[in-house]
Length: 435
View 1 (cartoon, one colour):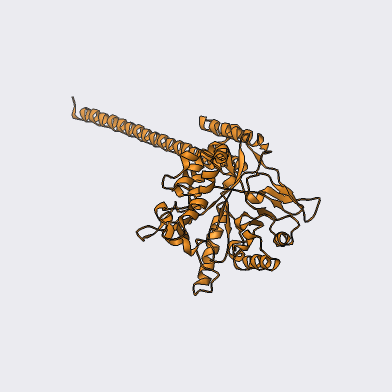
View 2 (cartoon, rainbow, N blue to C red):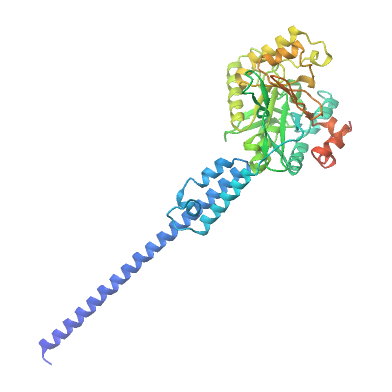
């Protein structure tokens, strides 16, 4: 074979190989691009599915807390996720169907609410005993008083699941009344709508002042703002260590319980704090002309604002909580001084309120001038103590009775508490002495 022909053949073979290599490289490149595109698409699909799952989870939590409209709006906030529900352009998927099903479930639940027609349920506590070994040791305030009128942290924690199991739902006290549109200056009861079988429950706490006499006896020391923006309790342990805790009183315990059990609270409602004033508020001495008074007043306002944003409200529990309320010697001059001083010294820092929780649970006749003075200062909801569970409606105010939950009622009225609220023997703290 001639050299020229051999060279031509070799060059041809080289060209074929080169073309083949180009084709292979092109195929490999296209395969890589196709694989990359597929991976990107899979990643995007996974991200979308995760986003849908998060949306469903958030909406379900809102729904469980009776935020029906908010849950529906959230599920409809991204048309790409509710194609089958809204007729959007995106192809339906199983996840879209889950959102559609959840929307239908929520809308059905909202439509099924019924008007509550049963008795009023308002229970109240005093600040909880954190350390029974200090409260009942007889070294400070008489242990008998604590034993009669207080519950322990352990008891309160055990009550909550039972209350929820009986169908109770925490409901805002202020929402029991509304202005009567046909009668200016008059009020009427507001209709309450809940899911079938649910019972509105008002919960209040007396004397959230953390009086000096209680400090060595196993109670919280004060309320404080935590670094997480929530309200905590400051507690002094039996060893004298100052610490912040989530289980030092009703408030943080209930906050955490509702977070885990939103069904127990109507739209985030917690309860009402009934404050006196003669030793400040929330553990801060804002009425004694101390050097830190201005700073503490701002602290109380900050805490109160945070609590109101988290479902709590406030009430007047008188300024002095003086014995003249209990023994019947209260004069007109005293009720004016007491009420005016609370409005001047406490209300500016916890906000306006139309709720008056009576000291010692005292009752007034509706036309008693002393009672009328309280009502005329804007307190339209008056809460004494008795177990009638019936609201009395007057022209410009209501009287709502409240039931004490404490050592006395758990011991002396156990059958009543058993019927309405919880299994007393299962709740009673073994550290509690006999009454």
